[in-house]
Length: 254
Image (cartoon, rainbow, N blue to C red; front, side, top):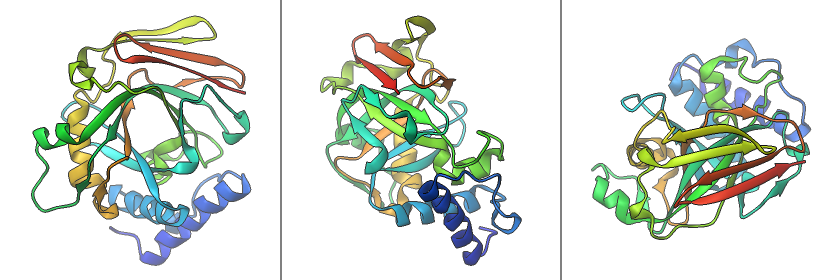
């Protein structure tokens, strides 16, 4: 990490104030702008610890062999079986259809990496989900990848659909998916997640990303990256994602 502890705290102060006061930042002060991933994670972790307990995670990667990145999620932006959310929660509404895993057992931080079999044994259910992408900055995506990562990786809300307990029959890499916005077909794809196998992402999260918080815990909800890309919608739009064999989820933000 290249930033001082004081700069990390100052960056977290600015991001938390933007949340609290609903006054988005044009940018972070120069001395608090993260220069690399280590800086970004230091700020992200400081913000998360001050918001409160972590109940979920987002994790993704730009390609099947790329290093993943992650961000913690809290109870205030985690919703189950909800079809409506108030538009006033968000500055922008960027819809992504995703696949979520919920854990039935702990994957605590340890020296020996968790194996694939151990990861699979820790999964309790799989769900269709929407993540809403948002920002604490005035212009979405204007601050570069490290500032976005520091800002909870552009997380706005995670909406989780009904559980599929018989999840081992689901192959996310070959899973078909459609996404409709206001009745118009926007996405019709197989797989769609540019990260490839989500179990690789879950393993990286358990072994690396969640380590500052002691690893992953039973009941944690992990969303494993967009299968559709980000589609920005206006308040009042209705999104419907259908994962045949996995489930369907619908959401109106108004």
